[in-house]
Length: 354
Ligand SMILES: Cc1cc2nc3c(=O)[nH]c(=O)nc-3n(C[C@H](O)[C@H](O)[C@H](O)COP(=O)(O)OP(=O)(O)OC[C@H]3O[C@@H](n4cnc5c(N)ncnc54)[C@H](O)[C@@H]3O)c2cc1C
Image 1: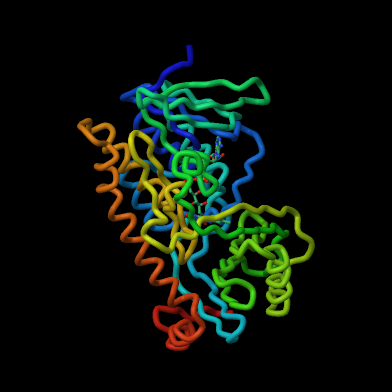
Image 2: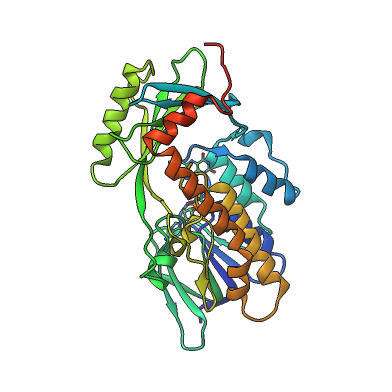
């Protein structure tokens, strides 16, 4: 007999770990994740915690342990339009994190009653005749195992197997994100945000972290690697000090731009975080939406009552509206003329002593 749960969560990133923490006291929960404690963490991320995410953590009454912070904390973003040769600094109040430690900290808050099945890849899902779900996974190379659950929650990020299997028609535009790590050589560490339409119609960034300089960008999947090399050459000409890369990371990243890109699930299946399409198309900031959507779903499930899917769809309307506004903002930021006007005006920028 397969073990049975009230809820099976696939993915223990910020979305899944938050949901497991919030549901774990009230019901039988299984949480499956590919990662294993102390194993290689491969999720490429800028690791910047935006003010919205900070607000959500404070609503949870959670305080960040010092161990997840990195050096240094930076309060401005150097914004470059390399084609139009424009440079401005904008104040930003992110917290600079070690993403791997942040995720591990969120997992450490999950109540002990939750069955955490780590080092386990979910390989398939099936809706059974009685409306339950059968979830298959393989753990550490062992034979396939199966559990059943009343609800299944896809918190498995941009490549979500839950979304692909249960909602195959709900495709979302995805870009390839590439990041490379270098030894930090700049006299003053900095964050940057780079626009160059000849390289990508999205944007590129850099972050300084614990003695490393991380350069990244989101690119149309076709020719992503070549575009990244052009980015490096362009920025080297503009004074960035790169040298030999120490590590290269790549992954797919969702790029929502239409209301139907957001998919919340139906009939006992739910999507949260990036699996639902909840990520900002203007900045690729997604941790806040992962935390927020998990919280909204947990409130729906723990409140008890009929039609959880309909109530979750209603509860998540605010997230969708916010992201659509971000999409409209991205239409201005990613277009040369409006960006030129905004940057030239100096609106909301600050002067930084070079
Ligand atoms: C290059 C890059 C930089 C970014 N920088 C930032 C930033 O600085 N700040 C910010 O707020 N956001 C950033 N984001 C976005 C942010 O990383 C995501 O939006 C956020 O991680 C989404 O959280 P999530 O929990 O929904 O999914 P994820 O964090 O992707 O977690 C998904 C989890 O599911 C697991 N999983 C996936 N498939 C399976 C499977 N088949 N079986 C078992 N487990 C599975 C994975 O191991 C993972 O733990 C960035 C994204 C990219 C690509």
